Length: 399
Ligand SMILES: *Cc1c(COP(=O)(O)O)cnc(C)c1O
Image 1 (cartoon, rainbow, N blue to C red):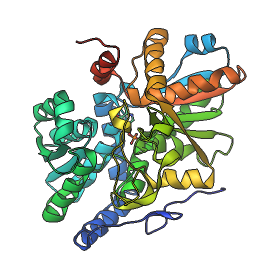
Image 2: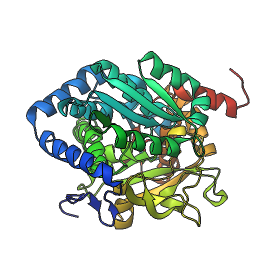
Image 3: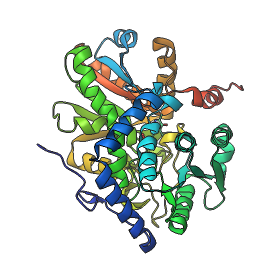
Image 4: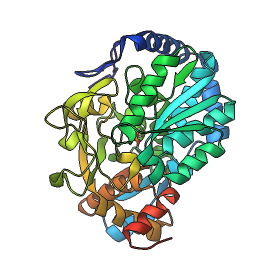
C-alpha cells in the first residue's frame, strides 16, 4: 500500500461502505458531500476547526509514558495518547466540532444526533450550546433508564432528549429514529453522526476530523522517543477513535495497527460486540460492513461492560483494513478490561474509560513478550469518571 486514498468517490472502501438510504435522503447526502468537498480544502474552515480544537477542546492532547506500568511488565514501553484530557472527557468532541462548523456553513439551524450510552449525545449537546443551535438527541428509552445522568447532562446543556420506545429501546432504535427525523426535516436539519459509520460521506468525514489524533502523534512520538511506535492500539466500537489514530499511520508500514473489540463475556458465548471478529457482512446504518445479525438478517443485541463499544456494526474502513491485512482486530473481555481499569488507576494514577481499558488490556497482554525497546502507543480515548457506577456495580459496591 504505497499511497492510500480511500474511499472512492462513491464512498467505497473495497466492497464496504457506500450509501444505502431511502430515496428521500439521497439529495441531503449529495448536499452534504458537496459541502464537505468544498470546506475540507477551505483554509478558513480548517483554521476555525484548528482554533476550536485548541481553545475549546484543549488540544493538542499529550502523549504520556506509562513508565511504572511498563517497568512492572518488564517488556515493551507503553505510551498513552491522552484523549481523556479533552473537554468533555473523550475524543468524540473532535468530530462534533468539525460537523457543527459544517452545519453552520450549510445554514442548518437544527442539529440532531442519536446516542447509546449518551456520550455522543453529550458531545453534540455541548457543541450545539457553544454555537447556539437547536439540538434534539434520540436515545433508546432503555438507555435513558440506564444512563439517567447523561440524559440530565444533555438537558443542562439545553438539548431536547427524545426517548425511543420502539424495538429493543437501545442504540439501533435511536439510529432509525434519527434517520426518520432527518428524512422529514432535511431542509433545516444537520445530522451529526458520532462514529465512522453511516452512509457516505460520514465514515470519511468523521475519520478526517478525528485524524487530528494520529497527526499529533506523528509529531509527538519522534519528539518524545525519537521515532514512531512499533504498535498503535485502539478500542473499536464504531471505530472513530481507532480510525483517528490509525489513519495517519496507514502509510507507515513499519507500524502495526491493532483494533480491540469488546469480547464481552467471551466470543464463544455470543454475548459480545465484536463485529469484526465474529460478525458477518451486511448493511447497517446506511453502509455495508461487518454486523452482528441472526439467521434472518435481524440485527442482534450486543453486550459489553462498556456502553461505548456496545454497537452491532463497525465503520466500513475497518472492515477494509481487516480484509486487506493492514490492521488486526482482537477481542478483550469484560473481565480483562475491568482488570486493566483497576491496574491503570493504581499504577499510573489515570482512571481510563472502560472503552479505553479494552485497548490498554491488550497492550498489557502484549508488552511482557516484547523487547524493552519496543513501543506500544495506546489511544486512551476517554476518562473513566462516567464509568464509576458500572465498575462499582461489578464489584458489588453500591454508591
Ligand atoms: C464512544 C467511545 C468509544 C467508542 O467509539 P469509537 O467510535 O469506536 O471510538 C471509545 N472510547 C470512548 C471513551 C468513547 O466515549
